[in-house]
Length: 163
Image (cartoon, rainbow, N blue to C red):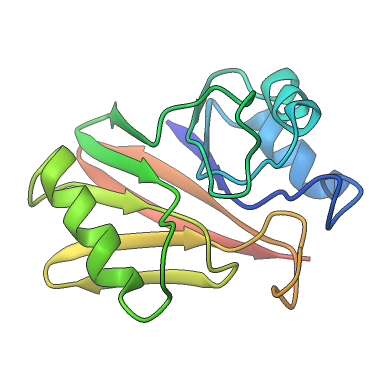
């Protein structure tokens, strides 16, 4: 299965919209994961229109009328993904997100989070953490970024895309 993994749209207060090449990747994916901070119902509606299937969570900048869960768990081809925004201090970001991943999905789950606008693909105390950065390049990001991921037979292969 092909996933598009994005976060931190921040439309319209920091960006006008999704870069077209990224919109095309979202449209082409079998499933889209968005780790929060759409920042408007319209931005959420845009992603929902593009996505064949969507798993999304609430970010700290999302208005209350963006009715999404704080944490979502997705099982794909033998891989458990735990999606959360990662809200809070940058100082303990990886430990905090890894804790949510362990609590919600167990030791073998992969965490997907946003919030920092920085691309991360790392392992923190045994938990793989993915942060696709900001799909629109919203500040403080230096570029628009996202991941695509191929998931098959319990394996997750991630590709970083930058514009």
